Image (cartoon, rainbow, N blue to C red; front, top):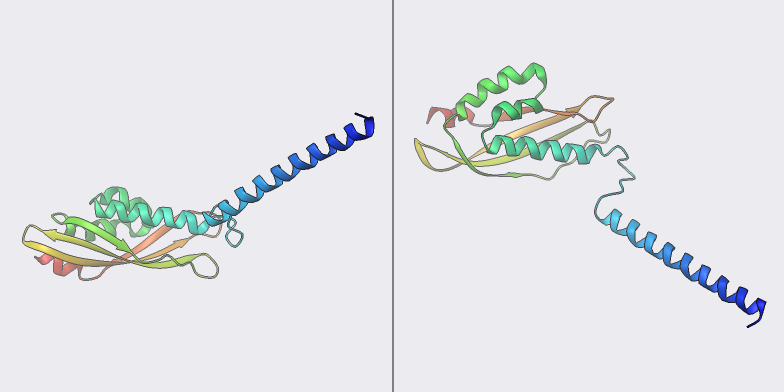
Length: 159
């Protein structure tokens, strides 16, 4: 084997390895985009952090963990939130369903409706309770807070 043949063979191996590395990186990036890992329109992951906060808050409500859920409520609204949750003291939640999450154009606010299915000892059949969650964040962080409104909460509380 001559020196030029050896160089040609070495060059082909380097090119082949480079091509394999580039192909592997391309596959990783394409799967990352498909799984929501790269967010070119949302570089600070505001929608992702809102999804996490909204889901965690709704799960806490579903399990009647109102003291923990209040941490997602704006501090000035926490006393009123806890007072309204007393109406659900005897409720037994079965399930909940959230509508799709959609941020506003400035990625500052979102409104989400959640429907909880529950029953109470005095009304042994399932009823639905709709909560309108108005989420907002301050300008400089990714901390989301909720202003929560339950429809027909008083009707359930009176039963």
